[in-house]
Image (cartoon, rainbow, N blue to C red; front, top):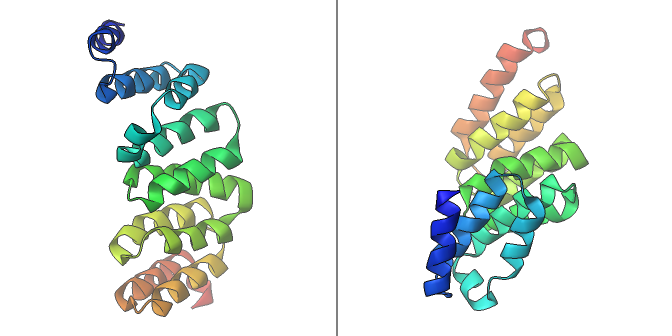
Length: 168
């Protein structure tokens, strides 16, 4: 509560202080005050929101997901992830898995991250969540091959071989 009061005082003195506004939003989210977080996010001026757009979308996604607005939450996480906000990728994949299935989530991995190094942990997340699906391993390997990321295609094949020894 002390942090909230400090942020509120800062806003009284400097109404344009965005860090204080975002601090209040993060506190509202931590306290699971979803509607408050959404209202505070919507009160941010568009020109200042543009400078922090990825964080804005990520925080909005968290609040929307927790009031069960899953499609809009996924859209917000995707906007944040596409703008390089790493923290948005896992919640986006979690929602895509839940709403659309593993194939859609796997395709999103290849869309969100161009480097194999950034894709790999996301793909591992999906494969571990849907571990009994050899077809997903094949899709992941083919995605890496399509993008000439051969070492990661081999890595997927090695994991598939350990996971499904009867298929090899």
